[in-house]
Length: 316
Length: 112
Image (tube, rainbow over all chains, first blue to last red):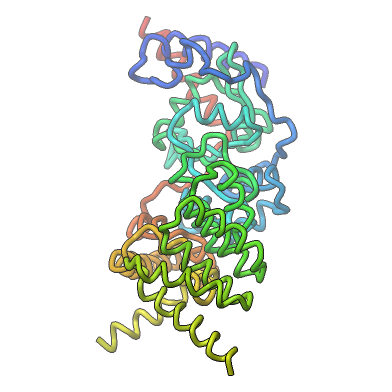
């Protein structure tokens, strides 16, 4: 073990000039040689991230359990085996790793293929699952990055049976580039990843919503991007589905102030008011929606019929 | 037409349990036009059935396969259809990394 450790140190030393000299081979770690991106602390280690040593072929369940437990879920690698492991492939697919996270109440998000983004997520306190290729047999392997040291140019990972695998940035890039720098995070719904890009995060929340009520996720989305009307509609819908009609109304009123010509906002606000028994207030709003026409005209027509019917019933 | 309808109805087991409640326009409907949205939904349903078959062929029992696919987004299902047998499947590690580093180190020395 000591000999292997020494050999590893030696190889890391040898790889550093390799990385510097062959920028085209390992471009991202070469860029990091020139300096750490702005705003990143020089060292990060998320020591509280748990360690689940993997069993044969099951780095997928082990890595996913690590990230999910760090995000507050209660799950073991054994429970994840039937959710991500493919017996005949003896491994786990990337897309199924993303999907399984949702079943445990976490929103999953594939990062942009950038070393800098990996470091930023770590600096924000989020462990990152990475897909490496170790070059032997099929070679694919999931590990979980939990820290880095920018002065030593090292990445710290939970990997296989090692609670603390330390790789030079260059070595990690060599192993990571085969998967096109694939990485993912899993977060509790009230948090937004540090590196979240708006439209890709929207897709992540929509995917989460297939499996779980997403009020907290849409609320966090709106906190991050307050001008986002579709997210307001999402939050209001989640409130409405849960019977929280006043909360739905409040969110939609704010959205209508921002975008008075949104048919979806007008329709949903009118429907919500009608469900609250306030059909007189709902009617002018649905008439505005109907006048705007567009792709949702059929839905608007139905809402309008509902409001008129309820008004007529009240009269009788 | 009738058999197509039957197929689509059978595929409807994949619709998410979270549909927008009565009268509300849902978030997923906001971006696409109605025609585009309908096409996308149909393609996604077909993709999900394809992935279900592939997962079962690779040893996943049918109930498990259904649950796993239900958690995929439409884009994920479409991306996976036809690729389940070949897409990267993360599996193992062991002391492999040390071997690679050793070989790289030796290669570097050799090249100098």
